[in-house]
Amino acid sequence: YQPDAGTAACLACPAGKISKAQGATACTACPGGSEQPTSSKNTCIQCISGKYSLSGASQCTTCDAGKYAIGGSTECTACAGGTYSRAGSSVCATCIAGQYSLAQSSVCSDCPAGMYSEKAGMTACKPCIIGLVSGIRASNCTACNVGQYSTDKINCLNCAPGTYADKAGVTQCTTCAVGKHSLAKAATCTSCIAGKYAKSGSTVCTTCPVGYMSIAESE
Image (cartoon, rainbow, N blue to C red; front, side, top):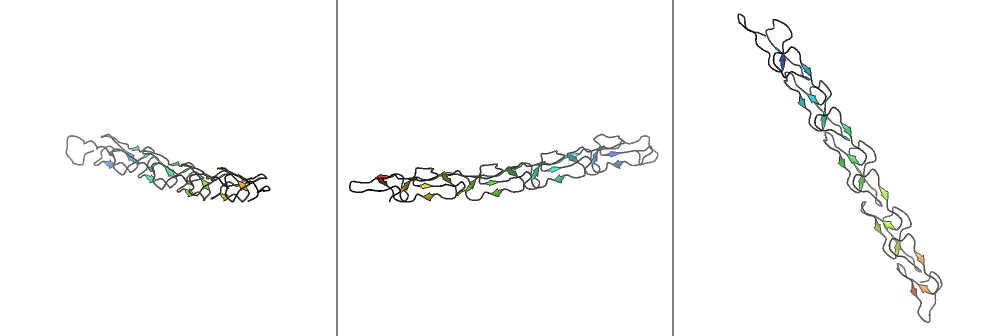
């Protein structure tokens, strides 16, 4: 191009600008979404996916992590909650079950122990109900086995001797009735045989002393 009359030479359009016609008196800036890294060119190059540019760019800029762009973009778009992206991405990937993310995230976060996310693309984890437990990155909560209980949503604890839990997913163990006993982690209490007795919450049955007797399940 040459903006002045009576000169001996033409000038090269700089990077980021082009001249499409002979006899040009000015260069034209490349439109947003394109680039031209070399001088003296007559066409602009569209930005590839994962990059963007404003008008007059000599180079397209890579999108930051947590954003994405399709080819020819003038800006990057933030990833929605439940998705994420690395730098230079053309799409956002969905977080798997057991994870979550907020908007514009570069990674998905694992649900902490005691919480879960049952579907892909979640923006938050849900707490387990008391009696159920979960580990890190859980997609569901699990009931503690019979003979166990939980109050913190993380750990299953064994019922203490003298108590029992006959159902899964309980928050406390039940004390053995009179005439019965149990060891740790019991699903039921065992009745004392005739000739032995046990008070409520007993861990063993005691033999009746001389001069005493009992029938089964006696106090």
